[in-house]
Image (cartoon, rainbow, N blue to C red; front, side, top):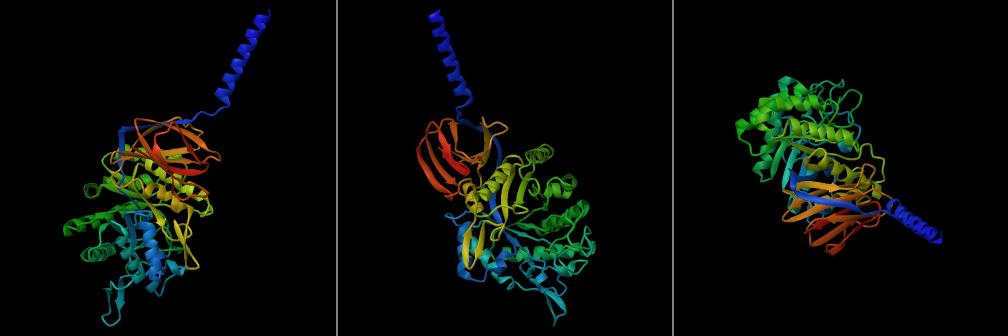
Length: 470
């Protein structure tokens, strides 16, 4: 009997140990990179120069900003989005209440000639910012409009119609707008600027105008959007321009999204002339189902076309830009857009502002947490990198998010740990060395590991980690 009791006691102890091991001790998360399963090729990371560059009057500060955004030791971005303003800074009838959002135009009225003429000495601060960005490494420039020039609009304002949800560009002025933007683009090309594309339309779904005149904007129906872009395409083809047509920069990828995108690709002219569709991933942050559904629909219906994510910021902005919360938020969105929307490019909205990656306070350049989180991607995932499949053991309730790219014989793996505690990961694959960089509450994209492959890696609590596997 004593021997049976001892055996039973031993079995009970063993069961208790197993139970503790299985249910109490946390096993590391497994991550397996499968480089033979490839997805989209990354073309670029970038940011927009809208409103803020025209306020940078100090040349030294302009240089510091350009280095932070485009130099290899900075974000090393490759795309600069230059705003071709609608001229509200010159408009006597301007209703935009925030002066910083009133743009200076190249298209000005000559009283003596009684006609509009081009003056490319204007918008000097913004052009200087563009020059410095290119000097630091910006390889491509996209010229984008929020509205046609105010002189072409029905309301006489570039902030939208006097009534919302009505196009502010009369159809008889479509060709004038086309010629205006192409004249500006051709001037930049002639000066040697690397103009990669023009984007005539911004967020056509929104009402733009009426009682709300917070910025320049112009509403277009899906049909009006296609008709205007078709005219751009036909004219650009006839001129033999060297840059592409980008658009229509949908303001949301679900509301009326299908109408705009389906009509866009149903156009024989646009289907032949364009190979990508640009949109903004607002209003669906962390809604994985909606993003997956939008990305899957696009991929299945238009398998030979690409999606460009050309603008995002936290909207509305509730998080402290200096806290790691803000950095984690942005890093999660980037991973979602790369994996669920299959974006081939990703650009943030205003670079220097409260909602940007940088800000200016009392003459000092401030680096937001979003800056360092963005750097975890932009410094290591370069144009030409190919996204590859990841298999993991995260589970639906996991607070980890990840994406992997393959380039130049190495794997770049970015992992976000949203949890309040450290997490362990085990990498499966035939790799010999690892370099790791970390952004968290106290570090900004710092080198935290360099050496041979280890059995496990520790992800700090609330952090973004980039692991380079060779």
